[in-house]
Length: 50
Length: 277
Image (cartoon, rainbow over all chains, first blue to last red; front, side, top):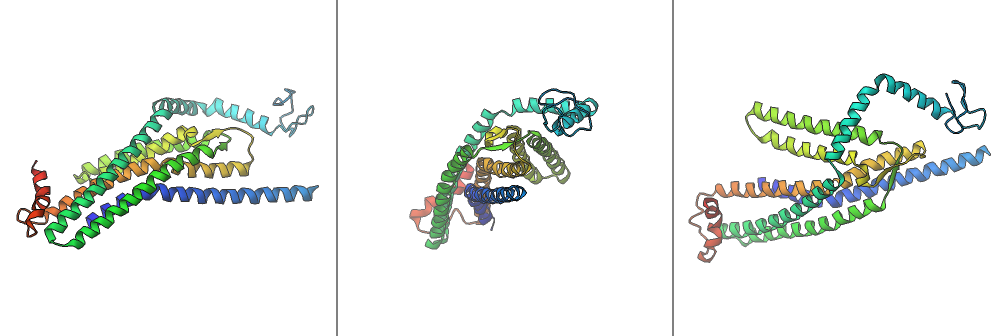
């Protein structure tokens, strides 16, 4: 059991770069989406203001 | 107050310069911050001075060297873990006279080989992604505060670990505290050197852009901490693997008289002999 836990630590640490990379991409995708929505809203509001 | 653009004297309650029309919100804020500096600026200046000294100590090249070393040692430890898994597979297969034990160890070792390949690829890709994704924040206030809190947290975790180890008369809490303290130190280090994560300070972003940049800052910190987590995690895991295998071997009282094939006797007897060496 102890050996399985230790093996799990090694495997988790070795896969951490992949998991964090995917997480980073998802966060940036979300941020880019928010940015796009904000820009679109801003453009719509400024066009209506005119 | 004075207009920040043309220098004309502007009434304190005016929202814009009567001469050039520039908004005076910034000028008001500037005079406010000047007043604040006069009253409570001593603490700010002292802490800024301390952070400047820490910045010299925790420099950018040193962080790069540390992460390179951790990546290298992580790969070495991972190779060690693969070799150890295979050796243990042979040893236990010989002892129990079971080929399944060896197959299981072989599958585990293959899993680690694949994980090492993935780690090597993604550590390099992460570094490339950071260098091609610049982030612009308007002030260093946020990274400075995160850096300060992280370093205080690192010292606090270390002190708490030492106190708990003394109180409990065991070293177990100290290991956890050391790992947490090291992680927090690296986070503080990165926060005090934001250009390591390609985060630059430049004014002119809107509030929404600033909010996005700050969230991006957190994501980049975690990506930049990847070599630390990889190196530290693999080394700790490999040590735990070796210790766990040793503990498992000590449960067998008949290591010196294996029931297996005499040809495998050497492999089967190797770990206890190694211990005596």
